[in-house]
Image (cartoon, rainbow, N blue to C red; front, side, top):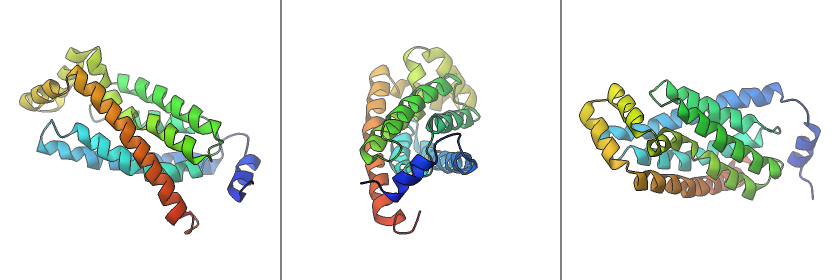
Length: 204
């Protein structure tokens, strides 16, 4: 049986609305702030910083669920992932991370669109791919390690960058990517649960 939200989505087909574009901007800022705050744990050591991304994807599952509730058109998830990656290039991330964000954002968009942006299970799986985009900053270590580590050295002290590079071996990069995916599945589930239990009652 169609819900009121599903009917509204069907009637909103066409070009992206102004409210959807505003939602992209607002939730991009919210997610960027959460990512930044979670990554601050890197001050406790380079071996701890990557786990800030894991914590972030769990927390971000909630605002992401709210974001999906406000959109009806393909491409907006991809746009948000790309904007987030561009923001983090301002803080020293390599430009190649934008390409990873574009790819994972597109995969996420396709999965969520297949559920008409209203299927909880597909939204959770789609978010799991979206949640990998922060790893675009370290995945290049698999094929351009020297360039990436040189960039880290420019933005941090040499000892910190060296320890960070040693910790992020190829097996560790792959393991962290898998951990981020699983954490995002949990974050996506958490977002859907919060949506049903709290935000729907509040009219959000």
